[in-house]
Image (cartoon, rainbow, N blue to C red; front, side, top):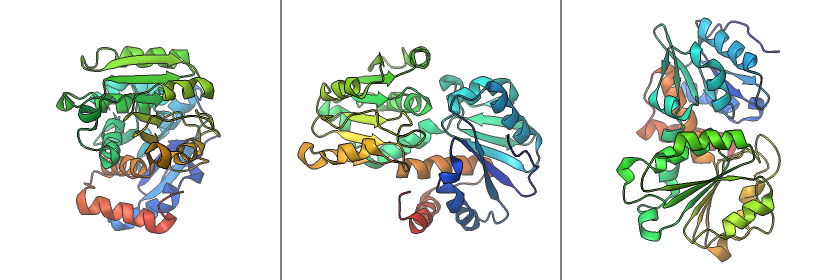
Amino acid sequence: MFDFTPANRPTIYFVGVTTGKSSIMNVFPRWAKALGLDDAVIRGFDLPLHAPPEQYRAVVDFMKRDPLSLGALVTTHKLDLFAACRDQFDYIDPYAEKLGEVSSLSKRGDAFCAHAKDPISSGLAMEHFVPPNFWKDHGGEVLLLGAGGSALAMSLYLTQQKFAGNMPRRIILVNRSLPRLESARRILDGLSPHVEFVYKHQSAPVDNDALIAALPPYSMIVNATGLGKDAPGSPTGDTVLYPKHSLVWEINYRGDLIFMYQAQKQAKERQLHVEDGWVYFIHGWTQVIAEVFDIPIEGETLQRMSDIAMEMIGGKA
């Protein structure tokens, strides 16, 4: 099922669902050249949503044993892969332990390491478009459509102690899978005394629309479901009405992006800021590449990575 041919060059893997459609497969060679990683290549491992544990274990075992397989970025499968392969990691970082997910696999000496980079990359992405003191000044809430790895990472980022006095007063997580929602509850409950967490088990767009309409102004609504990229569709309906002055974040940067287009139709009237997943994509990948190849990517280097990707695919794909 998978191509487990040993790597003959330093290789980073992309573990996802439809990796061949991702812009990173074309962007990475240019990034590698700019970073001085001329021999490095990228390969994809496509697994179905919620794949059997033995598939995750086979992929991880191959990378761990193959000398030139240096690591991977994991998307969509962050929670399932970690649950299936936890005992195969020699080091697990604190974020991965807390969230029960892995987004970055890498090697340090003889150690095979699991990191959860999403609290960092999602935080950097939010810093790009969430105004300073947004929660303190306006008292809005956060609605996370989805309770997977990205939603958990965002929750962890938003409730850090350093943001005391500037946190959303309430974070609502919506998910169609009750076990996943209960898992989120176990991880997030008690995370911060300043933030109320609410968990909603539902999937119908009409029910999500009602939640969105009930939010106060200056809230943030995030599509963290995978709909629009890993599967077609949107978690919201065409008649959804957003609270005024809110932030609407589609964390996907490719796919049909119906959720984003629905919000854009009322952006002017409702005074919304609608953000796609481009900046999240840049930070998500550069954080993992820096870990896998043990090189810094920040400042001017980070901007160069974004510029290269922008030049190649016009900023979106």
